[in-house]
Image 1 (cartoon, rainbow, N blue to C red):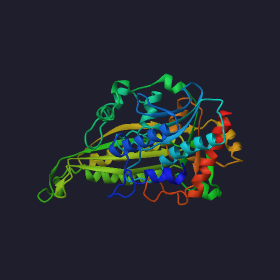
Image 2: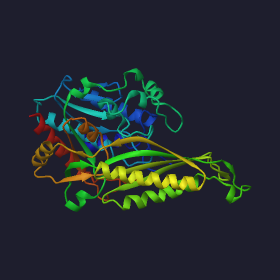
Image 3: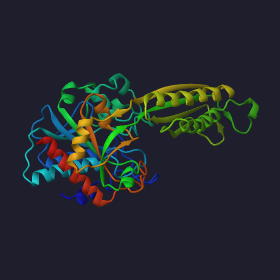
Image 4: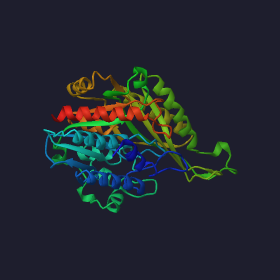
Length: 400
């Protein structure tokens, strides 16, 4: 199989006619089709495929065993996301195994490809859901009741996908099989463009999290309610969005983003009764990230009080700063001829595993514009092939 043939297999799955790009969310029809594609590709290669209790897919070259070198990524996307975020790592992993087999390579350590479930959190709100559950970073009781925008629970979605919700949770036996994890990913930024390199190795991931800010006021008629009589939650919500930009700008390297706002009931001629605002905040350190969020939340409370509204805040996910295993990072860089090492502001399953004590690393593939989480996300074919070559070299090095 070639890169082009595998890539073309995925081109029509989950296309989003309204947003552009792709919408493939955990255990929805598009993502299930992607999972079926992966299972078929693994079967063609004689890899043993199974799903763990959290819906993560494992394809083994040989029998599952401890101390394995594992590679892979995810197949879900953000709403209207690009083609490369996630699938590039899975396609590259399959092609790297093909390349190793074609040269007659026999790994001295077990080797596997994994597809982690719901990495983006595009359906149930919690990113890296499959790896968080696997490592115990998220409790089953907190996960199974998560709902998507249509009110479908994670438990129901798992059942529809043929998975048993009773099996959700930390799995020490599966986790112990991962001796080393290497995730290839399109770079979500222009670091490699600046460095004039097709591939690079990750150094660290910013501290980051998601918070749901819910503003409650009083629903009413847009035409008959005087301005002085209103308790309109849209106003403090809007002021909090502006505060997020200002607060993040006061901390070096911090980012704060509101990418989703839902007003209820959502009528054009209706004063909303509630507004939910989802905040994504990131910074180089946990203390900086927490300080930015605290500042934004304080601004939200002040704005809510001034309008006669109430703000409640719920933390939906959080990950501390991750510094990848230095020895593994340096070995990989050396194996790739001195590939550059660079940090990232994007979260990944590799970061969740690293935080759980698994030696983990990442290979980045150059993104010419730096655009990601959008239809314009891109990587040149030549750089994708360079990424496959790099991953092949890394896997050979780590399993020799």
